[in-house]
Image 1: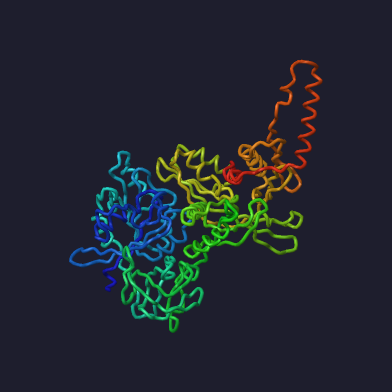
Image 2: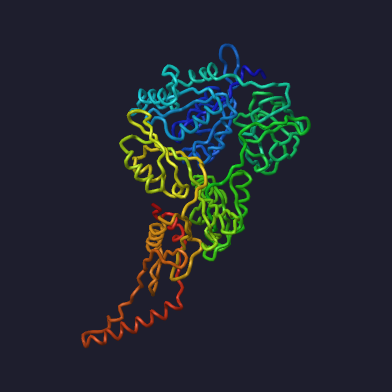
Length: 599
């Protein structure tokens, strides 16, 4: 295929700005799908994606469009729209020559859009600004134009104004893609060099790799090598990406397509890796490859102990299709056998939890999320822990390092005071404050990840009436005063409720968890003490009062000492009961710990 007739592009947008709807209209105009098809968001084919209105898994599709007497092949490489999947976004953008910067006319540029736009600029992509939802009553087109001009420095005349929902301006935008975005370059005669920008598992065919060809030609039966692992495979099938896979004899420099090569696990076909010939291939891989590291860790346990085998099978199946998910067996005195899992972020955790229930019908409990702490021991050794159970005795610890993130918050100027107060409460260090325009402000912080993962985003939205947007990326590990807080119920530690936090937050967090547990643990016939402790020191306590039978009801008049004797007898009985009684902790208590206020 002629390179000058190929256009590879992506759509950059914040959650719910209309990216998937725009993709639908483009697919309809290019006749890839039927206009009368009932399914909206064709590329978001996962049920969860359509419910949440977000792109979780990136997709790619090829469209043909006739323009000026030529048939152009437009490869739309879709990107996830959430901060948890920013590495996938970076590899998708690396596969393109251009990107559509999609801005909601009623909301303006958001933090995630800015982050992805800078990523696109780093890859030298041609950016086409697009204002969507121009037909809404509250659309502020002039303000959006001004923002794009001020923030990106693009000319107002180059902005396309569309309504993806109603198909307004889509034809003009497709023509703009062809006129503005450059054709791919690459040496067709060189050794093949292809970038893996996505991969997924098919239970009948193994791993299907989505690639962008940079140089050379790949054909069926070629022996290829994945350069990060040095593993070799034979290409069983190769082709282009339609709504369904379209087998073809070869892929040449500049094209986007797929390869099936008998690979058994997604972890063997890593996003960002380079593919070449097993023999006489290219020597230098494409830049930008990195190992995807989980940022958040949580224990997953079956609600019912007999579901453990189903849970293990479910995790293994999800792992086949999600290389970012890591897990190892874990046991808890309170919850039994389960797994310690690593996730990219809280949304990733939420998606995995939901998929367990829907796809495998396994109800699960997750323990309090934690992050990766680096502990420097007095012996000179360093250990990495992401489970509070593994926290060593403080007498052996020299220093503890926790991950700090670069945080960008974009918010209307009227809410700046509230947001700055919230960030300060979460140990945020303000770096700068920039006015995007007269209405909106971008504030940059350095903030500990442990302070972000619980309810920071919810509080941010609440304080800004839903207008604030958040983006964050890893900065560095820093020495902090981290302590382990244990939760004791009637004097016994509950290992699944322990958590790690900053010493300054230990009292508030411990008190909040104890108060929350008081609401969900049922009353017993004896008093139940709920305590939070650091080592042997109790830092917070509350008590669940005993159920009390009215033993004096049978006394009618007479001397008061008769009633006192009955109450003393009841008191002695309750003491004995407390010594031998065990507390019934319902499953809801473990869920309540997650919802306790961590501010």
